[in-house]
Length: 198
Image (cartoon, rainbow, N blue to C red; front, side, top):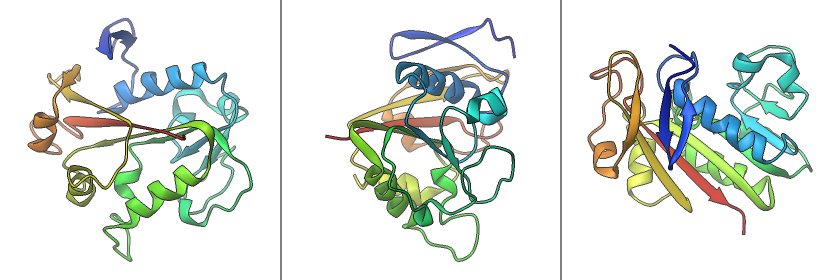
């Protein structure tokens, strides 16, 4: 995909990045958040940003990923078992939370909520937790969201609108009927949730 082509999210223009599926919009939005906090006191749950920036990026923050092994990952642990006294200004969880408790045994449909609470506990005062996931991949987490189990302060939605992976903002009504891998591969509607530590 051409990095010069732009999409609009929250009245701001972003450039698509060369990532498949929903990552093409998630990564540039996450980069903007990283820049706003000067890349300091950041935790990433699920190793996504490294694939775009490489080892240099790992110097800027901690990364926890249970399964992926590569240079710079702070720990290969489940986020529920991540023990640290550090508190973070920004926590990123990009298309990862929908896998927690869902993809591997033992299956636990509420573990994503426990992980959400754990991440919130690691924020410093006025810190920000930024979470994304594609609707339709894990119907349990979608149902938790629609049943108000996530206390996001802000929520936005983006919908894929073309085979060549273009996206636009959409409503919660689009999210309610979204399917994974239909009509396009991977996510077709993605949620962007923000929780601000009071």
